[in-house]
Image 1 (tube, one colour):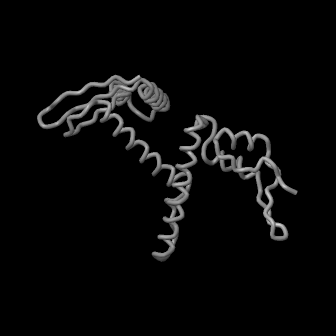
Image 2 (cartoon, rainbow, N blue to C red; image 1 turned 60 degrees about the vertical axis):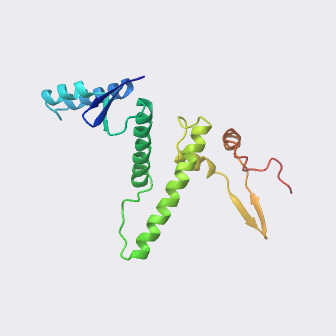
Image 3 (cartoon, helix red, strand yellow; image 1 turned 30 degrees about the horizontal axis):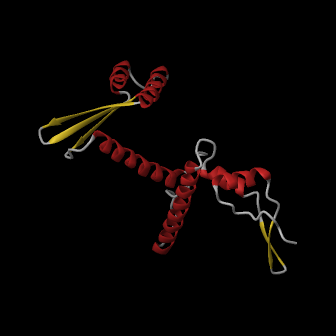
Length: 179
């Protein structure tokens, strides 16, 4: 539940959003920091007044929902950068020449693209609360494709993987394996 308001101030518009879930999360963090003596009581009180509130200053006079959706898009981009740095470890470059750096960034970009596509796939199937893209890749890693005497062969597909594959709508594995 998010309450919102809009007000004109000189040449700008102020959009204030109050997110109850964000408020609870920020309050928990403030209490933890106070208990661990990371912040003083005065800073705690200021933080409690601001908890859960998002103020956006803009020169755009649009609906409150449109501004909020723009804010959420920014959040998605920040999440992708975080994934790029933490999950893919792409922020650690020890390369000497330009070609190596460009290659590293290109591979990291392709990896991030695949990661995002897997996230979309999980979200569409409403599995994003059960699995991460890394979990999904781990599940599928239990199936092998073998080449023997010029013929490709898929090893046995575990039932959990087959069920997950069908639920995601991928249908990657044949139902009948020819001998």
